[in-house]
Amino acid sequence: MKIEKCKGMRDLFSADMAKFQLINEIFRHSCSNWGYEEVKTPTLESLHLFTSAGTLTPSMLGKVYSFLDWDGWSGERVVLRPDATIPVARLYSENMTDKELAKLFYIVNTFIFEESGKKNREKWQFGAELIGMRSPMADVELIVLALEILEKLGVGKVELKLSHAGLTRCILQKLGLNQEEQHQVFDRLLDGDPSVLNQLQAEQPGLAPLLALQGQSSGFVKNLATALALDLPELKPQIDDLVFIANTLQSLGHTFQIDIASVRGFEYYTGAIFQLYVNEEKIGGGGRYDDLITSMGGKPTPASGFAIYLDLLMKLIDISTINVQKSPGILVKMDADAAKTGFQIAKMMRERGYKVKFHLGGQGPTDTDWRLEVHNSAPFLILSDLSNNKVYQMQTPEEVLEKLNH
Image (cartoon, rainbow, N blue to C red; front, side, top):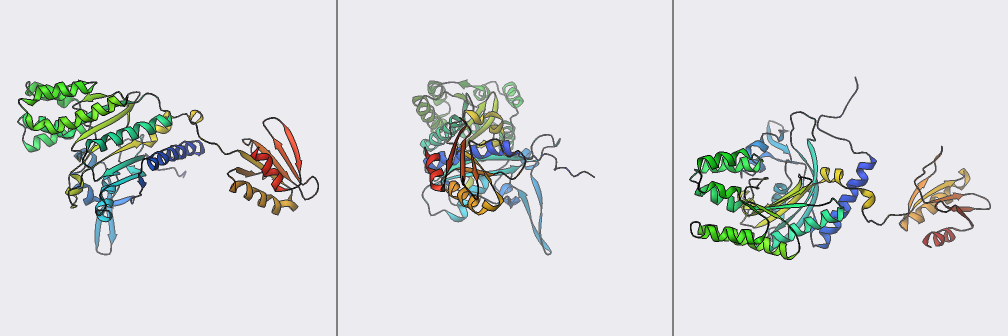
């Protein structure tokens, strides 16, 4: 019987890995330049981590990979992580509460069951979390960082959508819905179910249309604030945050759309939410989650973050258009009795940043810039520049390195 990979899983070939590693390199470099530090959490986490605080919608919880981690006669139910932010919040709560500010980033895989098995069940993503600051300036920092990374990757025009979980929840409360109904409606919005808006507008023709409001400037948010101030003064803090974020992004030259009902994502969001689209496909997003760490048993800690879906980026980027420093490739072909010298020279070249391949038989690799022949008798070293068919005969490895450097 032919053995095949599990449904919903994928193999990454060399061309895929070239994109994968390039994305990781650009992401790591950008985050480091902004003062973020890399962390990594376990693939396995306690199921209780994702259920105790109501951190995932019921729809998402129904799709986690859960099983018993057996230990003698007792055991704990664990999951393959369905989300990356919650484990990072746990990591912070367990180990980093003494830090006033933690700026963390990660590259991980997550697992969500998909019934048909035709779509990926294992998904890679990278993200950043800014833990310890309540200021909307932190939200702006994360949005600008995410946009900078996508610009460096050359994914094309990015559409930015802004919303606010606190504002949406407050409007739902004002609609007269009880606590359970508010959770149900919010979860449907998080899961991307637009039909709930039509239902609410039919039942609540007064305030319900507020959820459908959209605009493309900070002025829109200010006008919304003016319209709501008389009847809903408790919304002022949420609106002030959104106004600040919109104003700052606009001053930096970033375009966006305010979409009050665009809260798609996770239940743990409490404040500003942003989503990133390319060609109408969501490639990432994030938001503020000031209550998450508290709900997990930690002390009150404001936080916000974002995640970008690496699998989707790999479909969008053209690796040949991204300006990265490429190491020259060198093919080393050596006589059997010159193997020691060949390996020594290859080591020297790699230590200086060159990409070195050995000719092991057959036609040999064809994707190199130079070819070095190593012999045990004169001419000892023959270096060929494959770009212009020039050939140089040399005596020592130092001569080879000097020519390569020029």
